[in-house]
Image 1 (tube, protein in one colour):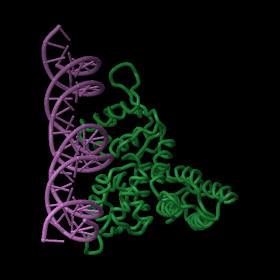
Image 2 (cartoon, helix red, strand yellow):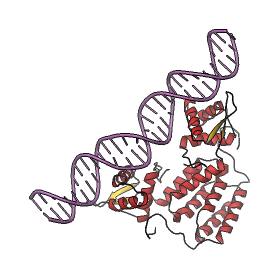
Image 3 (cartoon, protein in one colour):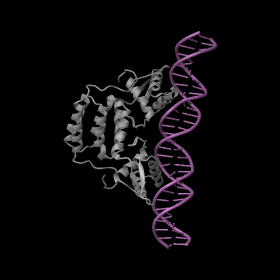
Image 4 (cartoon, rainbow over the protein chains, first blue to last red):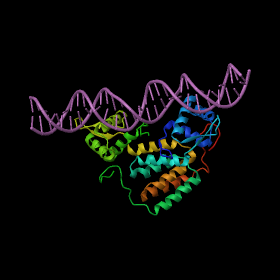
Length: 143
Length: 143
DNA sequence: TTATTGTGACTACAATTGTAAACTAATAAA
DNA sequence: TTTATTAGTTTACAATTGTAGTCACAATAA
């Protein structure tokens, strides 16, 4: 899974990011407690993940003195977008439509979300091609 | 990334699956050639991945005699759906809408895809909640 | 001002993944 | 029917990931 800087964020790291994004900023104590409650992780585990996230520049340490504050460097929205694009890049272009359909069906969406999607689709419909080409194989084969 | 059986399929393995899905079935020679052309992999690499996919029961060996044929055991569509759900499970429920919006914007969709999505959304709009709750943290905090 | 404790840095280690060589068994060519 | 070739199986090995212990240093309490 990639983040907004296109660095790979692992599953475990992603869980930490999720919490940091939600809280906006957090101390290691808060993170350790949250991860312990959410996942049952030991303090060490959270510390390690936090460090790796700092190395990957997904999180930054703030406040010069000791109980540091950690804040996300990469935004949640952008990271989600990158991760989603990353996933869709792994599948045949022809399948994108039905996969999106599945996601929409299985997720809870607010009225505003739905209205937004409808607007985007209406716009997109204007220039949509009749068919999407398969892009899985070299040469001219199709799914 | 998970497949339809909820087994983890790694990135490299996924690339092999993509080709097998597209071709419907393939011999190892075809796969080796395709992966070499697509990714520059050595024959050994493709063989290894193919084996791991067999072990994970994502692919099965067919035809009793030697140039075996390999076929997908898990379907492309279901695997896509599982992988997508897996991704969305990793993000805050509140962000699903805007992430889907981003995906729709960045992907090519056919007229039929769009019409299908519109129908699904229209249906979903009937019972959509005003707001989606954040599900990232324990307790009653929200994003 | 020393002892204690909370926080951050460094080290560890098994499992998984990406990548591929080496070996073995089956088929095709000579 | 021996040999060459192709296909399939085992083994290898470094990098990454999940999970966590230990060490060092700063803040606080005694």
